[in-house]
Length: 606
Image (cartoon, rainbow, N blue to C red; front, side, top):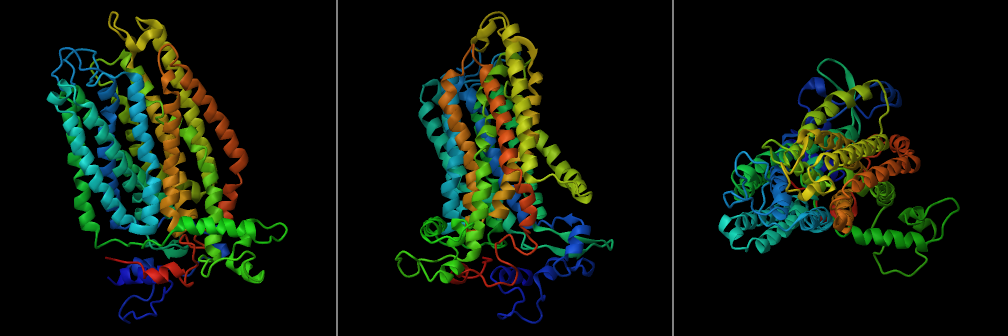
């Protein structure tokens, strides 16, 4: 309890507890975080210490790990359901099957239910993906301005639970047989997308909020070594753990792909609901244990007002319109040049600086839709390609599980081996460098996909009509395991691109915009889905090589543009002194809290 009170004081601008803390409580936030005397903090590191001491991540509180468990359950249910979607929509009930979508034993047939074809499958699954990644913008705004992050997650959990039940109803064998499965399936699919939108916008940000140390501090390890506990490094570590939890959950798709093939789609949709029930239990446990930053009013209104004010105010030569919008500059200029109502200036200088940094970071996000085309954007084509290859009884969508499996293995290696080693030896591998490397891995993935599709066409009994082949074995002799690099390489790329963008969204955005900016990163995946939806009518034989080729070229060009236009951000990130003299919360330690914080009350531990 003492530690929580200190955390609240710290973020509300009273780090020394001068507003009523008992003298028996710990005197500072940093000392409260580490009870071992050997781990006590010193002051902010000097310039010499910054150049000589290694950076380390702060401890990740157990509450953050429980939020990761929430994310695991949500992603297990999401991917567990969405994994079988393509087969459920595209393929008809297999001949000789059990009527629930499962295939007869010992055949090369693929599970199916609705039989609507590849174009319909691509359209519906892409629409689902688009909504699931565009709706977090609404969820992020509501979390930042109205409900708070925890409550927004709870509302999303309730909506998603209803969606899972509807999907199970659509997969009941009698419903499929009578031709009534399409309507409940589409309703369940859309409802699940809405629930996901509320959940995804807040989980990662809430997880990062649990680490209260927002500035660099020197720490003495039990070994006697002096290190710098760095908040930016801590966020990187938290985001990798968060992404690891996502993919442990995504690996659950392995259970549902085998369920659809061996038992039927009703089991493939029931299992995700069972895992999903972990969420309300953990959320109930966390309710009174979390650090909850309160919502802070309409950030979109303040952003619009800053932009309009900056454009209308007189500018000093060489300064951007952002500078003109700072209250301090407005005061020096003699006030607003255009008549505004009382209380128009509801922001401070720090908010303008953070807004500038946020917009600078958001520019690079515009390239993400191109990357996401290479990272799962062609999943329907890839599944169809697998169904045209020799599976020897394995589900055609089995290999998709190697994407999360790769992340499960590689993420800890990055977090605990590669990145600490690079920091120790002062080898730069900045955010932009990581993103460019991820894009180049996307290029390699698409090249492999194009070559495989070409070889499938050459060896299929039906040649360039491999997708609908019914001649001989109906499949190419190429083993489906040849697709493995198409799932493992994008997984590594995700850790370099997506996780890095999540870091940028959290560390650069103002506190009251973190949910929105994080949602903007997710929205880039929605735009990618929209692009796929637009061109999906062309996804048919004999043209399935060219989507891979086109996306490979697009990713290569994007990588070049990113390095050319944004390469300087790696150096600027160091110059921003995040966590040195500027806290991630956008307030130097000990400075007064913003008006919105004072009006709404200090950080709550409810």
